[in-house]
Length: 467
Ligand SMILES: *Cc1c(COP(=O)(O)O)cnc(C)c1O
Image 1 (cartoon, rainbow, N blue to C red):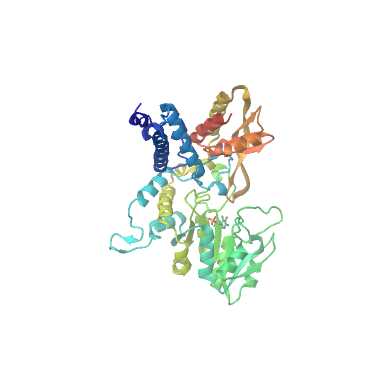
Image 2 (cartoon, helix red, strand yellow):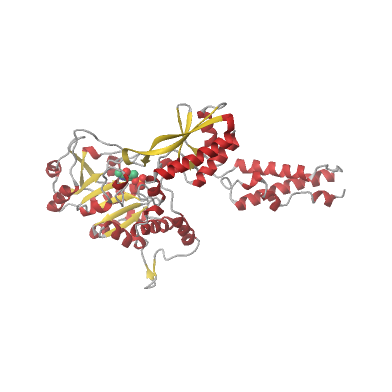
């Protein structure tokens, strides 16, 4: 056999891309990097062949042998440097899971991100005048229409929004807050620490469980810069407790000519009470009750991208916008693109298009069907190797929203004969599409509230590959 005949046995890249072992790696490597890795691996094997032929050996390798060798070298190269950041299946039932990326975006928002970031845009350009424009203007009208506020500003996240507002409105001044609202949100965001960072001085009033309007009134002096209300997002005080209502606080602020700000945290834009959720004031309610500034997150109950949204009084927003920190915490164009799409859904009341709202209000009938579909698929793959049951369970909103409130849901419980639930959970977590469920009483529990049909298919496929 001559040299060229042997080298012609090397597999072409296109052929390799059809190999099952290489075709489902999109979670680990980009397509172009995969092609480059395959070319390098083929080249490595080619050099091997040439080297041994130079020494006078005639390599007796079949096409199949060479293909296997190339695949093995490629998989090695890929596994030494796979993507770190990747999609996972959230089977925990916690809709806004901060560690799992909070709100998944609507498809239309993703398409808009691609469109607006793969070309130039009018990010900071006023098309009608041909002059410099402001990035904040793209969502300003929408936010004002949805919340009833005079003006709006968006920044990187809500922690930044709170820091910015305190810095701009109360630097060197006193900020009065109820002792019951000196909260830690998680990820070391603590109101007293943020206050120090902003240069404002914290003045706590009232007690942990009760604060009255006269507590605020007595603390007001010439150096008071702001009255602050913080939503106690992630815990609930039950029993003998009282906080001052927004209207009373805003009347006091108005009387003393001191702005009143509320950090709503999650900040819902629509009332979810008809879906069985507890009473929770919307951003519009807060504005209506007289709050001068309201801040909230873009990726909590709103169901949009990570962002901090500031709405309220026009003059105060102008002061905040002109503060140097605004530039340091500004929103980026991809986020802005997604935010506009999501806010447009709110304006048009197309709530079912927002995945977070859809999952929070998912009809029981759909969850029953999804659970049956998942259970059937798993039973087929497991055969007599394990058992699968559909159970009634409860899921949570998460992300510091509706603390203590649970929603009835459907889940699928899996147990294997030859593997503990802990081990099954570990393996699923480490599979090419990580599946994150919960382990309870030595069973793996998969809550379908946070899974779509695609997630269910992937879960069945991953379980099959593990047993
Ligand atoms: C979540 C939360 C924040 C922080 O918002 P991020 O968008 O995560 O930065 C601040 N305040 C309250 C009350 C919150 O619930």
